[in-house]
Image 1 (cartoon, rainbow, N blue to C red):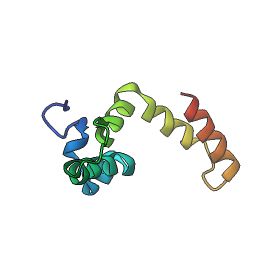
Image 2 (image 1 turned 90 degrees about the horizontal axis):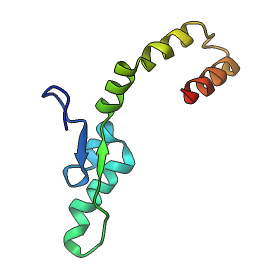
Image 3 (image 1 turned 45 degrees about the vertical axis):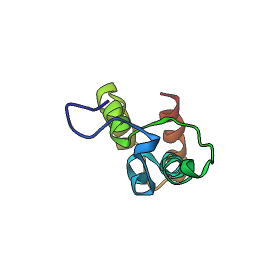
Length: 94
């Protein structure tokens, strides 16, 4: 699955390796690396897929969550750790 012909939104583990950490995170990249390097040796690694950072960013943009985050942070003193913690807690509830 891809977004308008650009980078994929979902990748199968067998398409991933450690060079993909920035696209799918460390855990997913590690699973892809294990499938690529260990499956042929008889090590059982579950197959699966990863949603990409591009998919997450597209969701944030299209859902309006990004805008809400920016608006909240504009009203937050970013040098005040307790205000940042409260803002983070609020964002996690969305």
